[in-house]
Length: 421
Image (cartoon, rainbow, N blue to C red):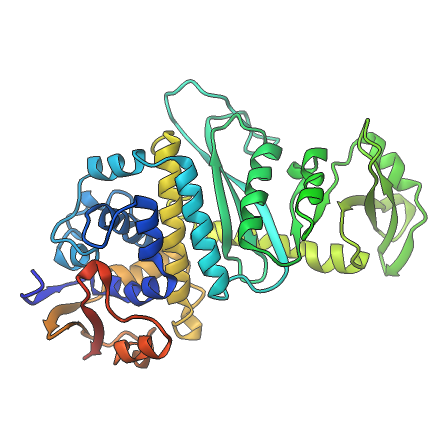
């Protein structure tokens, strides 16, 4: 099929290929499948990655996108079926998917995706209408209990990029699931870092993990129980600026002699309108730095969910955890790839969310695909305004100068180049 010229609207998908090469995604996928460059299984997985980048579930049913331009970018002449994808995912365990995520995280760390030393952790629960009999959980305290799939993420607070993700059924307690998340995150991030969480993580079991992961400190808001309120209201507060004061003391969980540092904040101008909040931490950093600067960066994880939610993180079509974990890991490869692509866009376009990026860059770009010698040439008609063509013209030389092999293993070692007309 490559011997013929192909015209279509999916040439934007080919912009992901240099990012996949830089990320080492093919080797990560091959390690997960246990297959080689010539096998079908890694190509099926790559199709799932590209589907996720398009923010379309089950692209095989979308005839408007099911043509050779998209198929060829996966190294195939056709789209594989739902059954083939399900079989591939179901044949791999949750442990294998978790290892794929760790391998991806290590590669992203080496690529500079996780600068800074603050990590936000948070659960992300997907409501489901599954007919299965299963435990129910509250998404919010004011919501009724519902069936849902639980995912847990650690995110670099500086860039908002996910470091690690785990998945579980509804019944698993947050503390236990988060313990696994922190353990896997520790395999990726080896430097000293501060983990910031929310009140859901205010448990003795989680704070005790600081003994095991000594390069991680924790900062967790305390639940305002009546006992805690009485404790922090009686502290001697030091005013820092108008309407804000802080105090410190020790804190122990019930039936536990270990002491933690408690930082309390008081807001309000007069006794009548005082309000109090408290944080437990294992860090020795300055209190103002911790609660006024570092803790606010936890919201980067919420921005990540909002920004990338359409990449399969807002739906759960099955509760087979082997399938779900595999799809989550492949979605994280897609997210990392589009993050690298987004950083190449002109500045005004870098704030596009996943859906907008898919519609404007990947899904609907007119062009053609042809082969010249050992190189696949992608021609864009109506030069896109959001791209800098110089990033893609003479691409093999640019990749070689960065120490990256320009040959594409899933495209039979062809190279890739772009033209803009």
